[in-house]
Image (cartoon, rainbow, N blue to C red; front, side, top):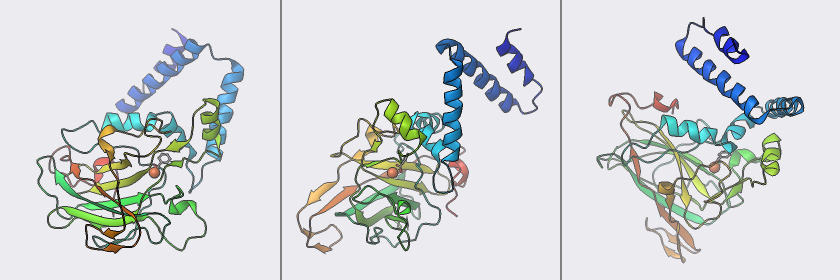
Length: 296
Ligand code: BEZ
Ligand code: FE
């Protein structure tokens, strides 16, 4: 029996069939990888050192392993396996490390920026099912960076959340909010993942985007972003999160009246993002557990 077969066989008595399936495949791929590249002992020691430092860099504010998964495209691969495109439903992309449970609630049309620096931006849209029927009361969690490309949680001197909030779609399934125009930003690159990017001649930048998590009973929870069509890095997103269908126009306007009637003395942007939710797997679930996210 080969070494590889021996290792696989060592898991044969595992009670959980899925565990057996995953460990078997993992062992086979790892052994094939070692043979394929003829891995040296020095390289393996270097890899173990890299993974050790990845763990050491992680704490409750920083998750370097998720970042590693993101820059290797594994996060997107897992999303693609678990959230295949469902007809005209809005596509999913990475959650990222800056989602925070318990974002402040806002009424429709309010400003979620809470003083974050940036150009005012009005975002509106609808939440419907794949038949175009509105989903009243759908819960939208929204979070984004400011004009300096930083999230509120990356500041140490803020009093509270900024550039994040929770809204509920109205009786027609419509939502709207004010915010600031998002900007491209670098993912945290002062750790082992940054070393990996540098060694690969890769940059840390993500294109400008606004994150959405949309939850409604009976529907699949959607975790996604919208990307600004006029921004840089749409073609070299450090975490491979861009999908063409998620790129929208953030239209610039001169000072004047905004779509909600507000008068602005400064230039502003507007964007429309219509969200389409797929039915939950069995069509009658509660929509919350489908992606593992609980909006409380
Ligand atoms: C984000 O978009 O917030 C993000 C996603 C993956 C890695 C780092 C940041
Ligand atoms: Fe982001």
